[in-house]
Image (cartoon, helix red, strand yellow):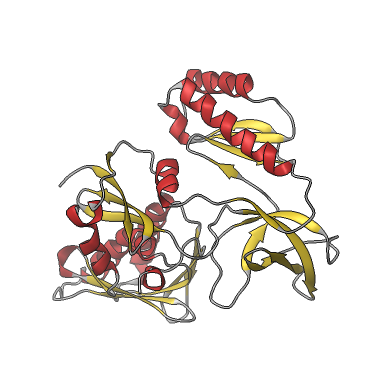
Length: 340
């Protein structure tokens, strides 16, 4: 089955969204019990952490941790935004750099100016988008980024999106309260799918779509470690308490090129497998044996694969034992923790 489909449904009573590309599960969003990334709090400064330059904060949903902060006193209120999910037993990661995201626009308080996605190359279109921005939103303390999804969108839709997003930012920033409070909730899976999966796709909203479209079967496969690759090779994705271990196996291929073929297939598949499983943190690849001269080719393929992935991932490099390490933002809760 070729093409793209977005299926909006529920699983185990949780809101969920799935993206299918050419018959394969390419992305999966499932609501969790933890505060959603993007949630904005009026938090209360609690206690500093000596030696780390950070401070613990109080929020209605438990403790949060703010890095690299100066000039805060215990008891002081401040606006912060959740940036990801906390590891078990740790505080919520938050930032004072608020961003208000929607399908076409990102409003950036404290960073004035209008900017357009670099992926929009057409100068005439860029000029049109700047006109829409200036007509819809006043220059001031709020900045604006027009996303790549604006390239083919209707001007009226873009203007409405800018206006609504700017109104939310203005309301949150203008709140005069002093007690800790949640001022804006992060987007759930259905809104995130509308916001971020902008390429043309069939939209499926009927109840039971996960079952009829094969999503439940794909989720069951994603809960297992083994992933089949091209040419009979396979990789195993196994999260531990400290890191995510990825092992590459060439299978029955015993040719001289078996290692680089399996490792290249792993590089292409890895972003999708991490997205679907909701995995982040330190990731260590135990690759199939290959000559050192092939490492650059592998790195190039891996870098290109992650370039299309929305979750911040740093390619750290090779270890003395020949493993390859990555560091990935914990933007989601692991699938196995949400669906037990």
